[in-house]
Each structure stands twice: as structure tokens, then as C-alpha cells.
Length: 112
Length: 114
Image 1 (cartoon, rainbow over the protein chains, first blue to last red):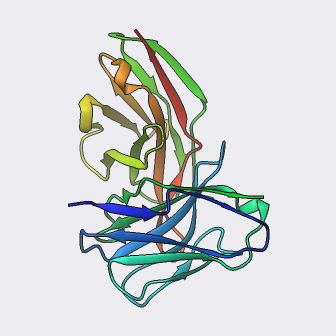
Image 2 (spheres, chains in turn red, orange; image 1 turned 45 degrees about the vertical axis):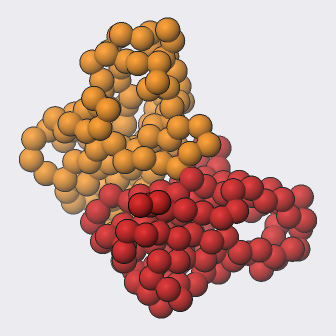
């Protein structure tokens, strides 16, 4: 049981480049989330999904898009990366919205 | 607005001593509170939660947390700290804004010295 996995672990982009972060979970969880973690700011919710084929905006969705084509996968896309998107990105999943969330190991993204 | 405050950026404690990591919250309605721990270069791990019931909640790795409604606090405690407890600790509260989301505090770094 791998839990929640994220790829890649590290990435460096130039301003304006695009990329996709992949999150996968093998716990059959309905809910999945993308957060970003910045120093002194805790975790902030970017987008979330309440089931396959659904997505919704969180607190800081601008500049990001997501897709949940399969229940086990939740993709986070940056169409045109900006230095303000330099951060550590965490994916999480939970069985339902009232349950604790299980987190992946994170992706460290640097935008130059 | 629903929020969580962790007033200490860092807590230092000697191994074997008791530790407390503080958290206060502001939420409308009944609070649902969580503690998570983050080890270096790792994701967050769930420690414990308070939904209802006893004010003292026991969790993983010997940690417990005390819910105090009058002081709107949910402090994390451990009777005897270990060096391996050194990590970043996050308090979170469930908030409803059309969806039940978690609002995280800014984190407290715990350093346990040998």
C-alpha cells in the first residue's frame, strides 16, 4: 500500500513554461486535494475534488488547473509558470470530507 | 473568519522533559480540530483529532491534545519528549465555506535536544 505518491519530487522551470504534477492514491479515496506550502504561511488549498470527474477551486486557484479523470489520480497543471509559484506542493486524499487527510511527500518547484 | 493561530514559531525542550505546542482557534459552531506533524522532506502525517467527547485526546507516538472551549485552545502535549520528535507541527481546524476544508496554522518547529 503506497498511500499517496507524487511525481516529480523536484522541478525547476523558467518563467512561462508549463508543467503537470501528478498525484496518485491507492486507498480508493473519493476526495483529493492540492495544497501549496510557503514559509510562514502554513498550507493553502489550491484545488480539490470530491470524486472522479469533479474539481473545485480552493483558496488560491489562480494560475493553476486540475483534472481528475480517474479516481486514483489528481493532476495539477501550471500553464505559464511564474516565480510566485515557487513553492512546495502537497497532494492529499481522504475517504470523505469529514475524515483526516493523508498527504503525499511533496514536490519542490522552483520557477526562475 | 475561521482561523488557527500557533503563537510560537519554535519550541525548544530537552529530551525527557514534557512538551507543549500551543494552538488557538477561531471558528463558528463546534470546532473540529487536528494536529499534523511534518518531518524534513516529508508530507504531513496525521497525529490526532478532536470532534466531540473527552477534552483530552490521545494520538499517535504518545502525543495527546487538550481541548479547552473557554480558552478556544487545542494544545499538543507529550509527557516525555524524544529527540526523534523534532519536527514541524501544524494545527488545523475544519472550516465550512461551501465545503468542509482544513485551515492550517503556520506551524511550530519543535527542537528536542539530547
